[in-house]
Length: 164
Image (cartoon, rainbow, N blue to C red):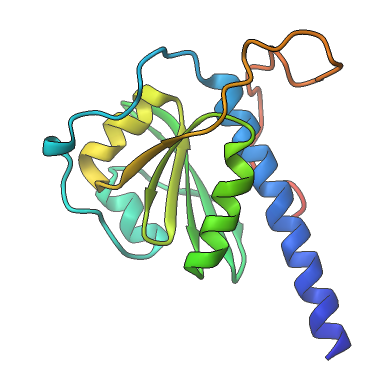
């Protein structure tokens, strides 16, 4: 039992680091002033499936970065731009991830047990293929000072695979 608990704690810590990396990359790359919601009447029924099935529907060749029991994540680059597609083992795990990620800002396309993270414009475009609901995290772009080493970061080289 003790080994299982320690293993679970390491997985949770790894997932938390992944959340932080994903949200920082999304927040740092986002500069669109649009609401990222798109026309509700134009979105298809929300897609379901594995990471690979969702990637195919989104017209992305997934570059898998994290392949864990509770979280699978891939970087995608399409004509719409770059984004991260993440799938979750449970609804609860997904909601906890989103709750933490929202504190870092960014745009999130949310479906059942999956999330797309990227620039608002990209999220809107992907929504046209996957459906889902757009959520926008807290905007921290107006903050100055405070020692935040991530302010002004352009997401150079972040794959979101920290701790794997």
